[in-house]
Image (cartoon, rainbow, N blue to C red; front, side, top):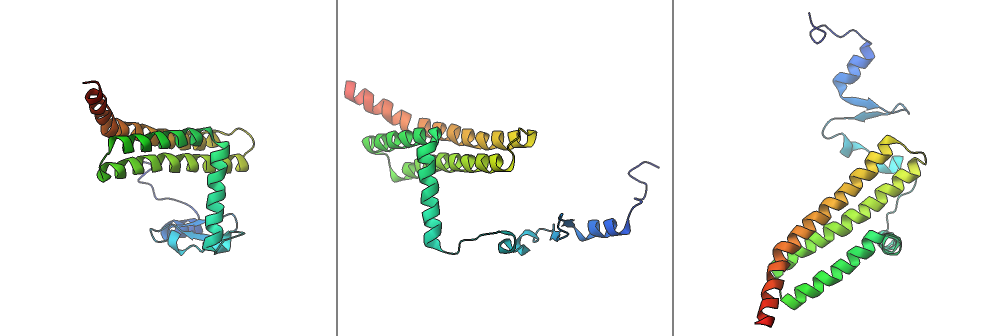
Length: 173
């Protein structure tokens, strides 16, 4: 009889937990691991401070945006790229349909750069010592920003480059 075929010997309490599909936290709380389990969690019960004011939420969002604009080199570069792409799009008189793609691509760069900054800050807060899991978290967050940048470059090449070539050839000819 193989190890997989042998009946599991163990604690009846552990077997019951496996059947219930729960996770026991260090505090002894049962977390439902079913598909609907996460939506049953009361985040307010576990969060020391929450903000119910939409105006305060907007204030904090603007504060975060100002932070990344002031402190993050990648966002400052994204700002320059945004201005250049918008000016090029206006000069080339691209249709609204293409503006939608450029807006999504630019937005994805801004979003992933902001998330990358937030993830790095949270990891730095959680662990001041070098740790393999912290490195993975930071590297994967950076990879997301890189992927969004690559997608943006592809979209710009597909939308703007042919129009730039056409515009320049009409100006020279």
